Length: 248
Image 1 (tube, rainbow, N blue to C red):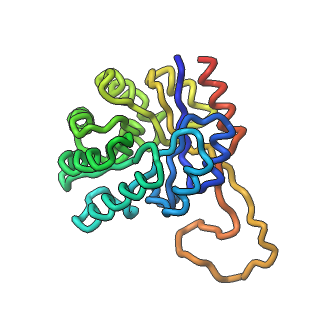
Image 2 (tube, rainbow, N blue to C red):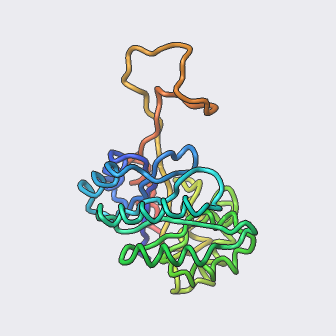
């Protein structure tokens, strides 16, 4: 079986590194420590300039839940138009109603607006009430792909629900496991789920090149945040995971 590997990145450089390591596609985001938000216009434009592989862009106006106001929904529509102008191959969206069901009507509107770009429904699915009904609603909205951890904190924990979703979906939509996938568990997850696409970040921590570092001052209040380290795509990890998938 031929697998596709999507790497979640939050910079143009990490997108380039993922491409060089052999990834099939990237999901371009910002603020990954908050679960991801829409990246800047400049980031999308330059990612498109330097990538020959697939470029999907997260369209998420803020961190937190997936119940959006009319104003936030309008922001999402404008961001989709920007993604189209920048030449993105696809967008990544997800919206819920307050009762935990899929906001199918507004998702379908975004799918229509995004055409001919592909549409992935993201892990908002993992926060929904009924995964079977939600899968059907997402399919009916016109989305091409569902990113999910099987309603658990990691795809490894949710692998058996993911297997059921793959079977239920058939050829109607691609089920793409994601969250916590790494070198040590990719073979097991692939063996259980039988999915054809996988989503992961495969990052490493690097130190800032700053020599002078102001003591006692930070730019944010996020616990554990350090201005002098950052995470980037790790080519070696990506290559190893690709090798594992090829040998399954």
